[in-house]
Length: 219
Image (cartoon, rainbow, N blue to C red; front, side):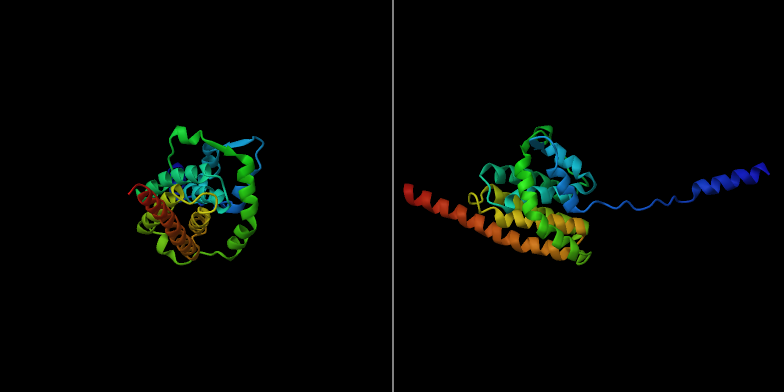
């Protein structure tokens, strides 16, 4: 009767719902979308909105990407500051990035973004084809905090990198780490660690050379 109908309705409501898994866009598709806007400039806020499904990992890729090419000094500095901010949040265990409005309102020329993306797309698509979930050491809370520490070191390296070309290994490192996180591929993350170590060593050598030159000049 009515009681059995109510019980059946209750059991139906209590059953777990089954939703189809949403296929997240590939990194290359997201980057193409960023480069194909109509405005002359793209803000950091627009970039974060575009990356909302995989915000931390793809934001790391986007911040590293311009530094994979020779760039004038302001770009590595801005990228380094933003990456430092993101790295600290990863170390703290945040699930999604938070950026102050003053940073979200900062913008870069869309032409520069499009140039960097077009240069990187062939290599990026090759990496996407061969990547697969493996070496899951980084896919843990502790692993993510260690990645945050690595990205923090990369960001400091970007702030003091030799002009125009010194940031390239650090840009490659950030892109590989971010892509490895998106694809859950620890081998790609390890590739980022390798480039990061080289880039940090290069930046440290540059800073030491400046310190030695200043010391010799005044003492």
